[in-house]
Length: 270
Ligand SMILES: [Zn+2]
Image 1 (cartoon, rainbow, N blue to C red):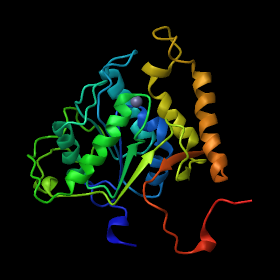
Image 2: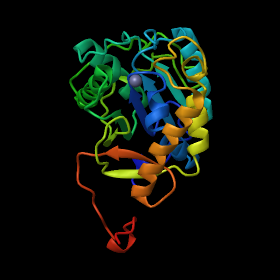
Image 3: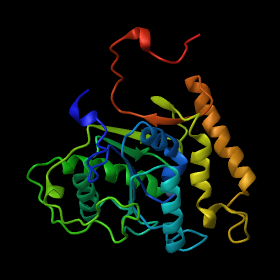
Image 4: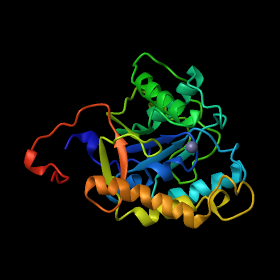
């Protein structure tokens, strides 16, 4: 196994897999089961939310910060932080790319999970392109960035968060970028079996009480909890069927798949 595929458990300043998303609760909906599964495999996982969720119909940014922390604990995430990019105005600017570069150089993930690059919500597809371009720029040796702290909210999960480490400015490019495609009706390149993680993943979503509990504010937009459960379960079932398992999460990769042993390729053909 190459060195950079070994879990970095001993090094608490680094993360193996980082999921980036526009809004708190996006990761819980699109790839939370996968993050939990990887944490259970011994990898250090992280979530970078670009915004603080202040435009949400229900609750405040502070409510969502607390809920995001609870969700991260359920998903056994080692590191979570929210940047200060305005909610509803995620733009692929140089300034925002540098905010993401700073995090990538600090955490040095091997795998970066981005939202799929097309979608209904402009923040989602903007986050995808912004994340990709930041990952590219982060690898440029001559791109120097200041070592200012990369976000205004503290990491509540105990990982190092001083933003002062000189090593944080060393170039780093993730080896692999995969796109969480659950929000988009697109055929996935592969699915991850989350049958054993499905219940915890659903609980992590329900940790966002301000968004999902049965209540009056915005009830025309937000379905009741039983309806949410049915929707989340049907989506996970659908992708599970594609992979020949009970529940799964879909991903797209731009590269082809490389196979070493055709005898070991999973998913039955006929
Ligand atoms: Zn979102």
